Length: 450
Image (cartoon, rainbow, N blue to C red; front, side):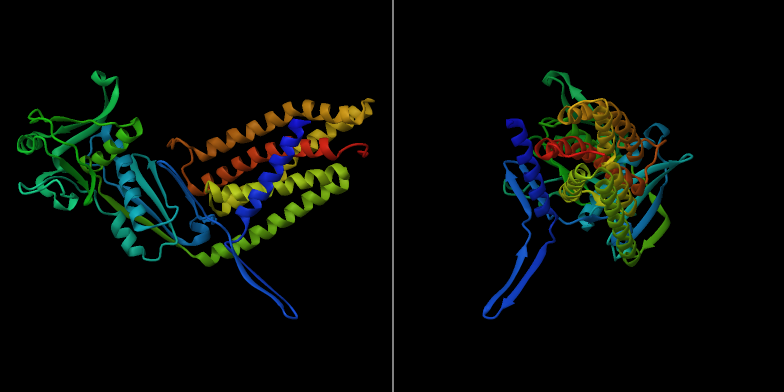
């Protein structure tokens, strides 16, 4: 009984919370009757939580992909002729990371930056939703990464900032490569190693000799990425940047350094503009299709299964509310294929209920009491529900390709479909098994099932 109460309270809490998240940003409330008048605008609260170093902020707006918001789709080809074959994969990843950093500074919401390989050619695919100044974006993205080392002038004080650092003449062309290694003398702590060219070794030796005890800053595209303090003169051409790095932080720093050490010129080979008006019309029709589909599914369940179908419809409504709320909270970048994935998941959301109800019918025909038949229906239908949805989840994993495997899909549109379908299947399992089962345990008594 306590568990049942807890589940009912959880369902109510999730439903009300989802409704609050799903509401529009502003809802005007106007009412007037004789001298009584209400003129008020309800503003949906935004999420802005700060707990120590953890900061979570959401504006609770649906993030639209390029096909809905409009924007530009760009394809760049990387020039790898000056990069050794064994370094090409690392070089393209460094270029991708650097472009992502530039686009974030450009202020583009929810950009998509992906790498792909066509034959022996590496390409960068960039999608910029809502971008209007296309020429500026292309110019910004197409720049080759510029890495340089800087030092403080002799007259610098402790109050000096990064603006006070001056170029030393040591640049990315003098850095052969950066890698992440582990310092065994410090319990395997990750460190970033630097390997300089012969000319770079001479320059770096001079810089470290005159800056012992002082910081030497490393800038990428005029922005500082690190400023380690020189402990001793380094004349071997091999340097180590240590600190309280996590493995991810060390990898990120190494990628940034390689963006300048393994510079990859890129050239634009494809540009496609996407109009937002097309997206708006497609969204309108997709929403209409989704509502019609939802209504037909709900009507079928109510007509065919009666009272039980109505309980399943309530669970389906809760499923829709929670799904939309998660789209805003995660957030999910919604594309037209993503909407298709959501509409498809609506039909799949009742699959579990149909399997359960049919198993219940079989148990009732076998002479089992109705409440026992309900419990047996849920228990014995679970294997089929689990196996069917596991197959769909595996397909979603392959389509989404989270590890960026080159032999699988890398399209943002297909990934959008996979992400919404994956989320829909997971939530359909929750609503089909937990929500419907709880509602039936509370409200299902002597009602008949046909």
